[in-house]
Image (cartoon, rainbow, N blue to C red; front, side, top):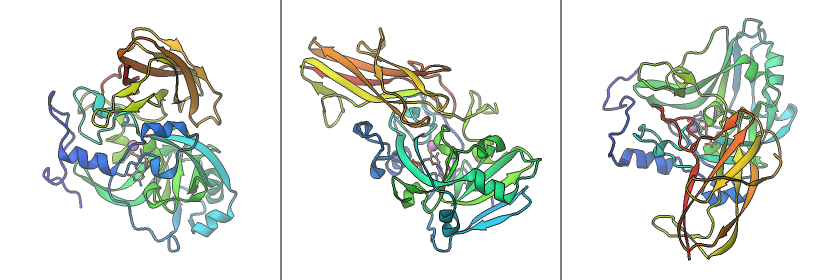
Length: 366
Ligand SMILES: Nc1nc2c(c(=O)[nH]1)N[C@H]1C(S)=C(S)[C@@H](COP(=O)(O)O)O[C@H]1N2
Ligand SMILES: [Mo]
């Protein structure tokens, strides 16, 4: 059944210029929480602090009865239990995940969806078995184009009823660092992060890392389902197909200094020297520079950058700020990689995806 009733599942919409966040958006924001920015102090995000994005409901999956189907354009379809996966080669990778919609609520006008500010990010140690080995055992046929990954979760989105399903090009699926992960930070995956098994595609925005995975199907054509061809597109007009969202663009975030005001989260710091720290990441190549502005983007200075702990995990940066002048200051930070520098102000697009504007932190020096 496909529901087209616009009362049940309204079509995509851009907010009116002065439209406030609605109760519907607030409900999404409380279900799908971000990482508190002080979480930037940890190399590996403690599980409860990692951001969450769940399109529908967390499905009720019984790990003992769970099976993963591998089929489509393969010579030997498989059905694997959790024990089957655990008996296979075991690999742990530290990977930073970021939602493609991070920063969306800062766009003007605002695309109506999960209203992220800056915090839709987290880094975990994901343990599982390489997908490539499972695909080799299934013997992928030579005409393979895309592989789809389907979750056990079900819902309606903009009128289209579906199981959450994403397609990935076969060359990406066969990369040796793509994992079928069953542990997060050394513990079985918690329900909200995809128990019992999820996909991890290092370097790609969050939507590719399918949770509650139950089916892998190899296709001899490009997948044209909702989560690839309607959602997760960088587009400017409603009927423009747009470009697909793939790898994470560079972004830096700052652990806000000092202490906050409860209501506004404005920071209060004492005058003098402060070490600003944070993390920077990119899914395209290692971050090669982080720059900090202490005058709201008028001028930029280079921060010290630690080497990456692994290719797809965030890197720590540090910058000494001499907060000499009392009063209001606006701190900003941006990252760059081999392909370019993060924009100071994000370019607008209809879905509010891939908009890595430079974070702003308002600070009062006293
Ligand atoms: N099955 C399924 N997988 C999913 C999603 C979902 O709603 N259902 N959300 C995706 C999106 S949009 C993101 S950003 C990441 C979030 O992963 P996390 O909640 O573990 O941080 O999961 C992805 N995988
Ligand atoms: Mo996402």
